[in-house]
Length: 527
Image (cartoon, rainbow, N blue to C red):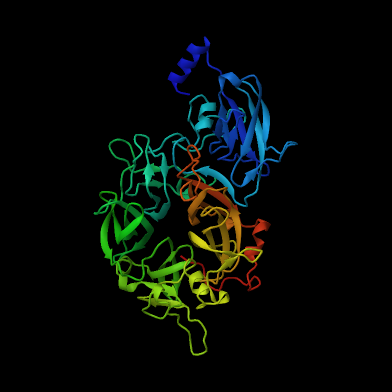
């Protein structure tokens, strides 16, 4: 607690203020603290567990008695009692503690929040305001692992993340970002750097120490403020080399007017001197290929390419700075006739009527979002689709956004993606595998669910893979936006939440049972 709060409490009570009661909510299998668990009293006062799964309960009128806490959390639950209620009654005492074990329904484990204010607020309160990560745990609670557990770069909330390794460090860039001082925040791409785990950074299961690029006021500053009205968003941040062998950090940006109208695209390049992106190339409005999503570099047919996945491949370009900046070098993965656009409905077939999928220049891509339209009008059969995933009941799962990478443990390409119009509009996260980046992607298993809440633009952090790729980590944007839900989870809403997924979990077997009956991917490991 702050000194001011301590003095005020002392004045009101006539002595030293009582210590908070510590509630530790843990996964009943792993024993790890569970973030984002809501505990609500019978007076409808809500507390939300921090990234250690800790709640610091400090209600003067409710100490030294039994207090009921209703418990709820996306993808986790407590068993119902005899009245059909999910919760616990705890004997609350100053300085005391209790543990609540909660059952995980999700296959993936929610492990911490990456951005925003108060990531470890309750853990710090339990330690009476000491954020020292070296301090010994109190009342059996885990230590605070990150350097800035309360407020970093004055960032209260951040939209979708992009990352790339550049200059030996991991670079992070986000969308629209909120601050404490005013409802209007930063809308031109804040950024940060962190050390990779193998170079002194925290292990991925502990957290991320972000060092923001900040302005004179200490708030995160813009790193991609491009000319024109409205917001700047960034996509496909990628590190390649130029003809001289020097690293280049590149990306695609969009200019956006209210409400959400994209009116211009361009390619930007990082300037080391001012530590910001600068405009490099305009992308014509009529361009059939505007790469989006996350990237990976992969050698195919003796050429090293940058692949753009959203989540599945939509485009590629040879992996040099010069060709990245040359729009004529881009190819789309598509079944349209060369030179045509999606709206023209020109499907390419060979003399035997077989669909011709391939990499084609000056042609619109056909992806998981556009395939259903061709099926609906009879131009494609479901079995001809490359990105039509189904669940174990055979129901079509339409992929919205996500990322794809090679996995050493599975010896397959894996994808983490959001479902479009699932249980939540864009809040359900799925896992899929394929033998090739271009599929076919056919089977998927839900790994994270949300109750009328959004969790979009998930990114698999391939550089965090552990235990030979058996364990992977991904994050996404947790927000009420687009969900139709007016409720906003305190501190968590509009922020990035990290998950951990173990690929030997037997519940993933449906997605791992490819039609090839276990044959390893025919493509070699990507770079």
